[in-house]
Image 1: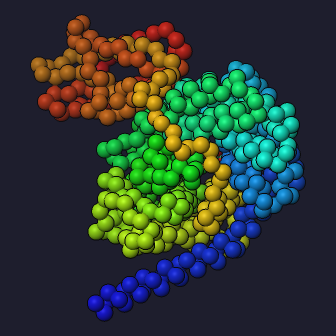
Image 2 (image 1 turned 135 degrees about the vertical axis):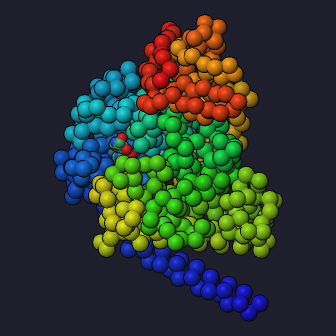
Image 3 (image 1 turned 90 degrees about the vertical axis):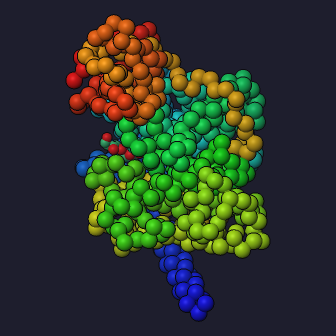
Length: 572
Ligand code: NOJ
Ligand code: NOJ
C-alpha cells in the first residue's frame, strides 16, 4: 500500500513536471512558430524574398531538398491556421495577408501547368514557382487534396465574412474561386491521385477525407449565398465520398489503410492528419467520419504510434505506453526516413481533440475496437460508457492528457535552442534534418498548441451524417485488363495474380485473383481495375496453401483511360 501510494505520488509529480515543461515550451515556441510561419509568406516575409504577395513558400531551403516553391497543400493548411486565428478574433492584422492569399490562389488556379489548364485538370497540380508560374519538372501529379484544402480555408473565411456583413465579397470574390475547386473535387474525386507524400498513385484516405469535408462545407455555403444549382451535385458526391471513406478501415489490423496502392503496410500519419484536419466537435466521436475520439481513429492511432517504437533508436528504452517520436510511415526512407515534427505534434493534437470532445459529451466510450488503446492507460479497463463523474473517466483522461503532452515534449526535446522547426530530426541522434524552417512544421505547432488549450475550428457538418447503404462511383472509371501468363504447373498447383490495387488484393496473397487454365499453359483472368492508373503486379503459384512468388522486379502497367488492355507475360 505504502509503495503504491509512493509510486502514485511519483507518477503525479512527473505528470505535473512534464505538464509544466510543456507549458513553458509552448510559451517560448508559440511566438517563434508564429513568426517563423509569417517569415515564409510573401511579399514581406523575411525568409521568402521573391514570393509574390500571399504566396507561402514550403521552406527557404534551396538545396537538398529544394523547397523554395509553393505547394497548394502546405499553403492551404498554413492559411487555415491563420484564418482560424483571425476568425477567433486573435489578430485582426492578419486580414490583409488573407486577402493576399485569396488573390494569389485565384491567380495560381488559372496557370496552365503539366496537369492541365484550369478547366482540364490543372487544379490538381501540387506545386508552383513562387512568382506564380508553372513548375514544369517531373513530379508526382496530380495531387487532388489541394483544391479541397484550399476551398476549406477559403470557406472558413467566407463564413466569417457572411456573419460580419460582407456577403458581397463572398459572392463576388471568394465564391468563384471556391466553386472552381469544389467542381474539380466533385468531378474528379474518384480518379486516382498521388498521396499527400507525393509518392503513391492510387486512392488516399487523407485526400478522400478532406474532399468529403470540402463538399459538405461547399454545399452549406452555396445554400447560404443562394448558389443553389450546385447543392444537389455536391451532396451526391459527398455521400459517395463518405461511403468510399469507410473502405479504408482494416478491421483485422485495427488501423486505417492510408492508400489503396503502394504495397506498404498502409500505416501512415496520413490518417492521423486526416482525423485532426476534419475534426468537428459537434460530431462527437462519430466513427463514420473518423473523428479523433472515434474508436476506429483511436485504434488506428495506437497502431501508428507503436509502429515507430522499435525503428528509431531515439525511441529505444521508452516505455511501451509512453510517447515517442513518429514519422510519415514506418517504411519511409526520404531524407533518411526520420521522425517529423508535424507528425509527432499531430498525435498530440488528435488526443487533445479527443479530450475536448469527451469533455463536451460528459462521457467517454470504450468499445472492443478501442479497448487496446485505452488499456495502455488502465490495463483493467473494459468496454463500456464512462460518465465524467466516474473514477475511470478521470483516470483515463488524466493519463491521456499526460500521454498527449508527452508527444509535445518529444518534439520539444529535439527543438534546437532558438526554436527553429525543420521538417525532420535524426532517427538516431535527434538533430534537425531536411528542409529548415518548414512552414508546415510551424503551423502544426500552432494548431497543436491551440488544441491543447481546448480551441476548436468551426464545425463543418460532420454531425449526424448517414453512410449510404450502397456506395456508388467509388472505384472511378474502370477498364477490363486481361492478364495472360504462360506458366507450366504440376498437378494441384494453380496460378494467381496479386498486385498493388484493391482489385488485385493489395498484395495480400489470400486475396489474390485465381486464373483459369482453360488455354493451358496460358493462365488467364480478366479484372476490372481503375482507368489511367499505374498497377504493379506479380503472378504467384499456390499449392496446398504454399505460395511461391515470381522473381523480381514487379510487373508494371499503366491502364488506358477507357477500353480494354491485355498483358502477355511469361512466368519468371
Ligand atoms: C519529394 C517529395 O516531396 C517527398 O514527399 C517524397 O518522399 C520524395 N520526393 C521521394 O519521392
Ligand atoms: C514533402 C512532403 O511529403 C509533402 O507533403 C509536402 O507538401 C512537401 N514536402 C513540401 O513541404
